[in-house]
Length: 320
Image (tube, rainbow, N blue to C red):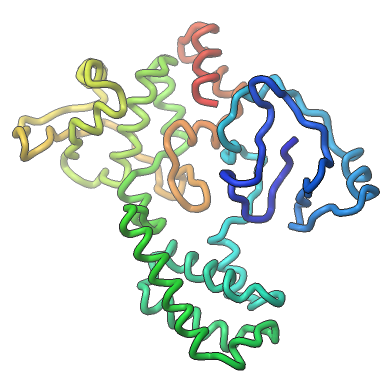
């Protein structure tokens, strides 16, 4: 049973996701199970747990895949306070309790990195913050300020260097590099592809990649990307189909090992503010579908676009 989470969660540790293939649900209130309330608090006494358990609404498990590797965070009903948001709130309100300084500094530095603040400036902001906004909850800043300053520098270096090495970017860079897509883009892609999931995957990936590059005369897309969006055997077929439909044009600037073949997309571009984002970051087209449509809505749109009922059902299973 999964409700709304309003505290940061690590979906790889300590959280079991149901339904599972051979176990659709688990009895609640087992040893060390601590349900999380919407305000971030936890339920401790049995009386509290039973009180809130009785308030739960019925939920149709048939609408959820039986095998889930992770929580589906991309639904319109889910509300999650992420580390970025926590950092921004801490900056505004200051330290909130004892023994939280180290984690709070991390949240602030992470939030600043996400906003593409240079590391030196981020260190200065975090250092100034803990001096002015500790709210009496930190003895270290009063007794060992040099150690706190050194710790902030170490934390900042770890955040900025680790993400740089893994090629994980701040939000604006992430969105401009990987691209983004709007809900209207998704709807148009469904109609153009007539409900075909392989065609839909290719076109949505292409639109997503081209969106931040829309102002170029032509956009170079390496064949490695085109193959990843389809397959080595099928990607040229997808391109030809889109050419014949008048969606794309290609020029002759291709040169093996030097220039990728440039593409011009005949598309009605949507405002970047309409991009489907999760925590201010663009997500894959499939996750964009999850974030924009319920499974029922997605299936209906595929059917209206021309997909057979059985094909639409299988597509929903693949995406959700």
